[in-house]
Length: 259
Image (tube, rainbow, N blue to C red; front, top):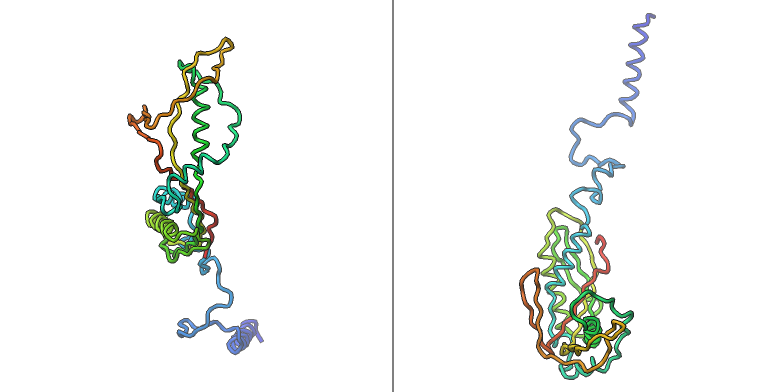
């Protein structure tokens, strides 16, 4: 038997063996019910690794928080049921926090600038809000960045305050829609609002410096019910008056994770 004949017999035998075994290649045009591969390529089929299905960056969360802080403006009735005189008495009765180290000496033509800074710090310490409310919300968003559900996980005790917090978050999310598809997210927010009353501004008495270059703490500060300030950089003025509403708000993002 020649070598060419032997090679032909070997090829015929191998072809008949593989054609009857389970290792035969699948048909070129498989039917619609052809089973999917047992081990798919995760880099191509897993949605978690798709570039069009990413999580929201931290910069967008910060923009939403700033937008919510700008829009959140609760009223006195939403924060407390107490009247303004009662709130004012609570502020004056609360203990003043320690002032810490005295402010450093500033270069100024006013001999009483250090004393005025001390008086202003004392007034600000009594303007701390004594009536506060806090609510925690859970926001669920779709892959398009739209709010799907907003639920209250920790109510504040005032339905009107909770509704105002929900409205400000809805407006903030609507102001920053995502530019591409993203994963559905779940975020937790803490929204706080405090109410207080502004006090009259106290002007320190004009007292000449002593021989040791220190301003003596003598005299009684003069209370001013209306005062103003001028912003040199913007060229604008601002007028304030005593016994006005003082609203203090704070919005924190506690958690954000894929749904």
